[in-house]
Image 1 (cartoon, rainbow, N blue to C red):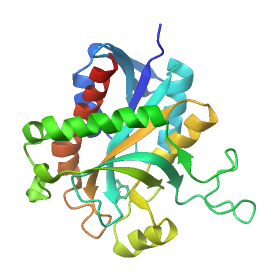
Image 2: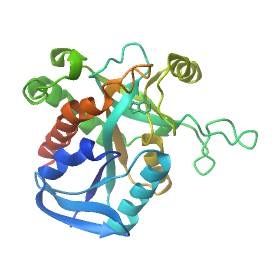
Image 3: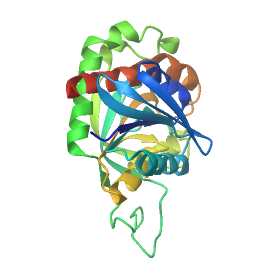
Image 4: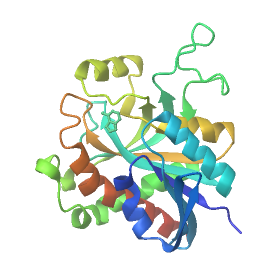
Length: 253
Ligand code: ADE
């Protein structure tokens, strides 16, 4: 039998609509951490909410690998835009990830993860391709119908774009332009910043488990980053995350 695929996010609101759409869901409590096993368009998936930040993301990813034997990990949710072309409402699929707050220098070059011997961790190309195609289809065919409540007119659904490239992760919510600018100074091609993806990447790369990360841009990592954050997550990221995962599993079977 095929191994299940883990579908993870950091917040309940990001993944709740995925869980609602599972066939035959079974909820399991593992030492106080909740997982839901079920089927989505014929694909066996295991969902879980990691919590915020790299430690939570790494722990949940490791639990999914060791306790459920997942064959791949997909992490979805929101991120702050960094490159100027990445607008609120856009979708970013990571092809590489970096921990922008990892620094074991002078023992190792800044950002380099010693166990991997590199700073930039590549996502699985097949999974990433499939998720980007699913995001493209979701934006073109369903976003207009399903994203009905855009808080404060933050963006136009008809203008959503898809980007692929570098995502940076760290244990900080970036909410000022000085810090956003400093991240861009360190990684000139970084598209977005969030708090979990590169930790998932490290755990999966160390264990040779394919993984992919996709993000919906909730803010521009500036002083307004927190203003509409929660309403964006519920009104936009929830249907978008579920829609992309659904489109992806539909194409698998
Ligand atoms: N997730 C969503 N927006 C973010 C930001 N500005 N910084 C870090 N993580 C985020």
